[in-house]
Amino acid sequence: MGGVDTRGIGLEVCASILDEQAFRGYAVDLVVGSLSRYMEQVRALTASNSRVILHESVSDMSLLMGQVDGAVSAEGTTLYELCARRVPSVSVAIVEEQVRDAEAFDRLGAVPYAGMANTGEPTRLFERAAKMLGHLVCNGGQDVVTRMVDLLPSNGTEKLVRELVSIRRLV
Image (tube, rainbow, N blue to C red; front, side, top):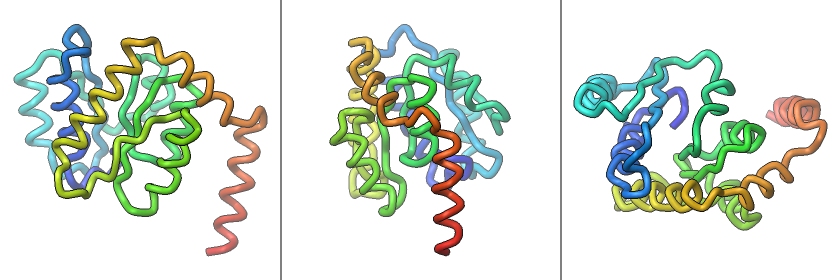
């Protein structure tokens, strides 16, 4: 859940995906940033479960995204990358500022939103995210992928750079 997963959310999502019936035959790629506080628990999980493939401090995330069947991601620029790579995805908001955009992706039918990670029952949230992803992956997810790609303008990189520059000027 980002390069700095200070709450171990990625680990919890991974555990929920491992438990989800739809993913019994799948390997689970777990991406962990260099500043994770949960490396001991991550290493214990990877040592105890051969289905978990650990990726630390990934230098080419786009390449990895192109190799997966689906993703659970924090809402943010990663969702746009997943859209561009045509990866069926489910989003989770990590901070309050991400909720509005996550809900917008969901309303557009592009990226289902599982909920806010700092709610009172995070385990249920992660289980819901895993079930939602299982549904997408098992049903091909092509309708969602089409809506994901439709969100991206043909000049997406140029537009994104312009938007980021204009936002930076406002700060």
